[in-house]
Each structure stands twice: as structure tokens, then as C-alpha cells.
Image 1 (spheres, one colour):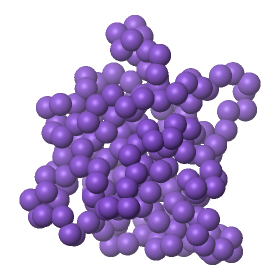
Image 2 (tube, helix red, strand yellow):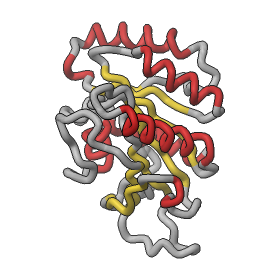
Image 3 (tube, one colour):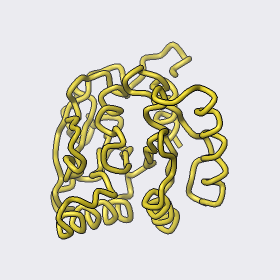
Length: 215
């Protein structure tokens, strides 16, 4: 939450979609800080981005796992994109992982795109790894956390859909998740609890993003 009284440079303007990136050669030039969102298919990434930015329909939501097949770039509106008028940051919505029903070659292509991006993007400040609060950290989540550790990419866990479980269960999940990530060297220790549907935890997430890009 912005407590300084100054306008929040990230979230005081509406956000817009600028580019879908199907392969690394289509990445925009490195410029503003980038914040990426990762998570299993259907974890609620698109809904979270819409709630975070306050723009309905910015990121396309679907009940069909695996719909996001590109790196989708979003920036605050009102910047020319010139060297002296760059947006303060960009949000990158990454393809969901762990969706086994897609053709193997499609899954492999998504996976290569995401991991190549994570390893090679100098402007990437932090990855927010979304975990469905009803299920906790699964095996394929652990695999992604291990890869982020090896790539030395800073990441933070964001629990989604916390309105779907009872408050005492949220507290227990926060404690259990903190223990699980303690062994991961690239993990930021604070865990965020959110609900896109109820707009819970969005101020905390915005504050975390502002902190990440400033450090």
C-alpha cells in the first residue's frame, strides 16, 4: 500500500496490453523493470493481473487450462515508449505450467520459452509464483522453484483464491508454505495471501511490486 501520499507511478494509470511474445526473438527491448507472474495452469494468473491493475479484461481469463501460450506484456498507459519516456515497469504474464492435456510439443515449447526468458532477462526484477491456496505447493511447483533457485532469479510466493478456504486454514497454509520455501535460496521470505474475486491482498501485492522494482 502506498502510504507516502504520493501518486503510485505503477498503478495510478490504467494498464494496457502491448505485446504477445511467442518466442524470444519477439521480446521488446530491455528497458523498464519487469515483473513476471508464473503458476500452474488455472491458478488464476489472469484474474489476479486484472484485479491488481484494476482493469477488467486486461488479461484474458478462461476456464480452459493452458490458454495463455505466450509471454504477454502489459504496461501503464500514457508513455510514448521513447528512451526518455519509458513506463516505470512492465508486467509479464507467463504461460501456465503443469497442464498435461496439451500436446507434448506444445507444452515443451511453452516451457522452453518461459525458462529461456527467466534465465536471460536482465531487467527481470522478480517472479511472483502463484499457488492455489486450496492445493498448496505441488511437485511441479517445486520443480519451478528449483529452477528459479538455480537461475538465481528472485521470486515470491502469492497464494491465490484464499476466499475459498477458511481463515484458520489460510494461517496454517502460510506457516506451512513458509517452512517449504525456507530451503530455497532465491525465495523472498514474505508470502502474500490474495483473492482476486474478493480483491483481497491487492494493496500488499502492489507494495511488494513497488519494493521489488526499487531494489
